[in-house]
Image 1 (tube, rainbow, N blue to C red):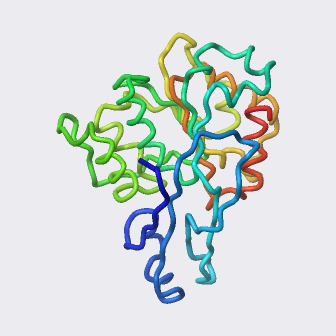
Image 2 (cartoon, one colour):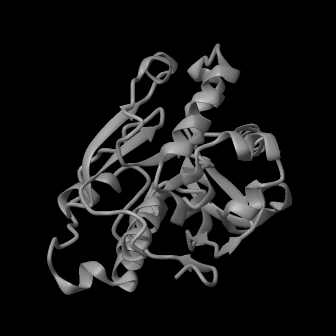
Image 3 (cartoon, rainbow, N blue to C red):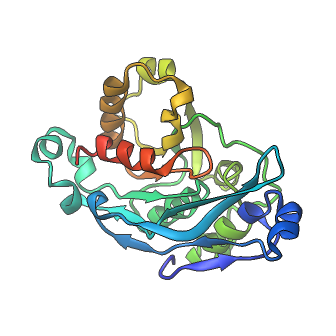
Length: 259
């Protein structure tokens, strides 16, 4: 899955935002989903394809691009900074880290890791984001149905039945996630106590560090984020082009991984 880029032209999910207005303006509203490669952060490239669109208060279409590829980081990609690499728990040396644009893609990568036996069902999720992303989703992943364990099924569900704000509830309803621990302020990040022996998956939205979030202890919160990554069995990171300038997103990524 995610082996080649594709586009979504239908009035569905991430392409459904202000679709009718965009259609008047552009005749064929569409967004693109890129492919996944194993890569390093310092080699990322900006793409020229639109990955998210919305209409502003003046009814003008605002288009947002992201990177040329989704990125999977592995231990060899992180070893560039030997001080950071050696200081983290051994779990980070094997835990997969996925970086992408729109947050709903996290659902697919979680299921991929489930099917790869890297995580178990009924696991706790730490959600570091200025939004909860807990909106209701009328679509449900069947708990025991065969198709719920097919990556093709999950891929279609992620891209055609979820948007950036409602991808967590299906994972709860399908018993993939047991508990969601929401961290949506600097205070909660600085004061949240996470049992270091507990099994978790970590979900980061870089818009948590949007300038309007008024992060005052930036370096300290970055260090805490690194520690959470070291504890997690799987890590997903969304750059959220609609909510955060992507140049800033890249800088934050480099700060997190000390590149």
